[in-house]
Image 1: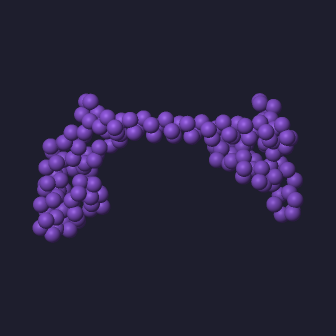
Image 2: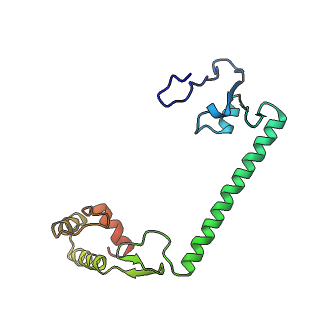
Image 3: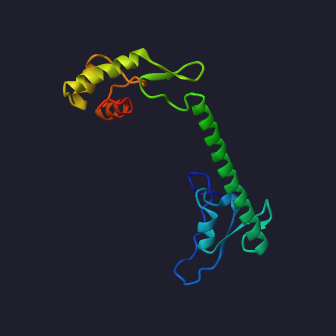
Length: 170
């Protein structure tokens, strides 16, 4: 029976008032999603999975969990290495690997090309900044002229400062 709005069963909490709290066993399907095995076992909680016949209270269960944990860690590292290798390869080919900086866009071949409209905005910003206009005034001037960001919103002074810093405008 479920008493909670999220559909999960209420879980027992270990008695932390005694110096040696008794071990509490939960079925794996019922444990809190963001809890880790280290946290649970550190609190004297044993996990018992009826589907996989694992009991972390036994030596065999501990080694099985350690093997599963090691394979999971290896898998995460391999994914990271593969992702890094692909990104480095794309960069070596001169292809875009994310959202291009303001003033540029990715061409059909994946290489960066200048976006004429955005380049014109950057030139306008550089002119205004050369006249010692504040970021707030520059943003206001762009808004008054009807210039919008890629997302269709008005420029903010913080956003404009970031965009232009990447373009080398001070």
